[in-house]
Image (cartoon, rainbow, N blue to C red):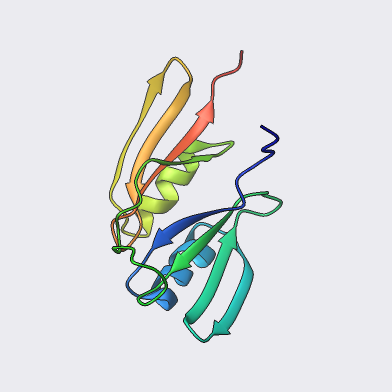
Amino acid sequence: MNITHASFVTLPVSDQDRALRFYRDLLGFEVTADLDLPQGRWLQVAPKGAQTVFTLSGPGMGGFEAGSAQGIMLVTTDVDADCARLAEAGVAVEGPGEFPWGRMASFADPDGNGLMLLTEAHQ
């Protein structure tokens, strides 16, 4: 096998504009693609410099159910500050808590896609 990385992760959403505001304006992701295709809008975002991008897949773009993506781990340098920012924006956050692999918290996007934040433990 010669796999080097994941190209994109699909996040099924019911409203791409609302999802864009969440991922771009709150999480600070950059728009990497925003195209009108015959099947619908192809909208991708990613943290600055990331290899893997997130496709905000709206209705009609595949048979995905909004909010069905779970367990997406996002690495951060400061989970506590990020959790505080999310809470200030009205996002329900569980944690952060200490684990052998680092300090971690969980939250969901407006459609219920499950995301986690992790500040990795120093080895």
